[in-house]
Image 1 (cartoon, rainbow, N blue to C red):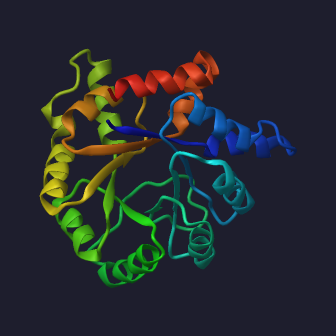
Image 2 (cartoon, one colour):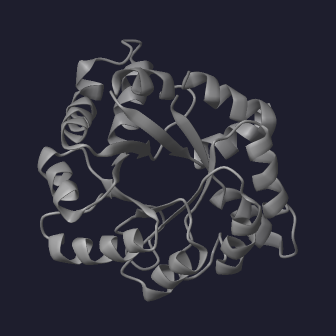
Image 3 (tube, one colour):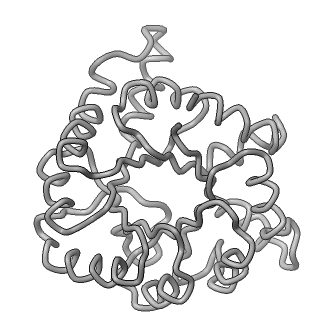
Length: 245
């Protein structure tokens, strides 16, 4: 069963836009779990433009599925936050300061020594470690050498190609999925768990899930929250879950 972890950053953005506590982020996370999600993902950034560090402490108290904290581990404040809350999983993302959204995976060869060091710190604290990564075989191998438990495949290129095929009425094809399948095969060979995320939505999710061997988890936020505006949050969570079944 492939797990759905819902990224609630966009709910925090909406709350922050007016001040106050509407929507109530903590209640929303509890409701999302109740609607069938298998986990809650947050991606705090130093400017706290969506998830605040205090949110993470409050979420840790109530999340009963899996809490996944994403972020740039080169920021000491992020490292301290993760170690203080000990989530089920930390996902290491190579964001730069003030980056709008994640747009590339780790170069696990260039940053091998650093990744080994930081992964060891988190694993010694009992936290599962995933690395955000492009579907490149050498980077997958580097993730294994660095000691990661899992990789999270960065799926923006898949989503763009899927949308292009759909607009041309040709449907998705082997070229759309091939690099991601090859990356998954290599990860499986190396004993790495496989997560995926970025621009996945209910239109492209089923094809991806059916063609990625060993896929364990997807993390989806922006598209799911946008769909919820039209379809309702409970209905949307369940629609996404059905794409994974």
